[in-house]
Image (tube, one colour):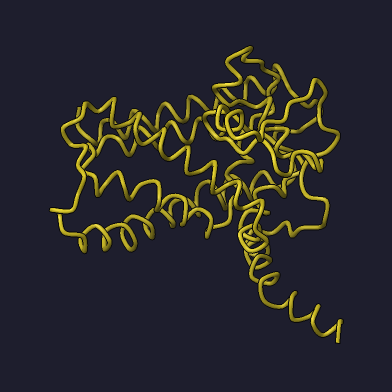
Length: 267
């Protein structure tokens, strides 16, 4: 298949995945009473999932990855070009998921990095599209580190749309408002039962359940939290802006003006 054909197939599967997830949310809700067009739905769908994703794709691939790629001599490359595409895909999914676990964990431990991650936790009603709400700085960091190795290591171009599809579907799945149990597999493959707890406004999970695709990272590194009950609330314990631009500015506000204001108050 040609790259364009693969991209079209992946996009079609993504849309079908959205329809399936939204149907399961209506049929088997984890948390009842959440409207399909809940508060912040259009911000998450239009501003984050569509407009921001499109613009950042251009920025990341054309203005960050491409110049880096062209500046690195090929003789220093460790190439995966001779690997079967299935092995290439597995390698990048596995290695990137390990990176995401540690970066995500660092974001919750660092006051500076938390400023670019808190918007992701600001939704009080978590559903399939809630995971799209991520600060652009966080996306730039993560997707550059995700896709740059794929390109500079000579992977098949088809790896990018296929991995993008898997990332998109998995991200929507773990945030979906679906009551589902994976049984013992939940300790290997991550799903809503662990990740919905991660988004809860509960102190005990602020430093737990960091995994994205493979929950065994939390098992191995001792950060898994599970409970037979549901969280009582989701989101942040403090007020957060609801407008897309205000949500982005808030991170910089807290980096710059908030420390200055606190210093003035202390003096």
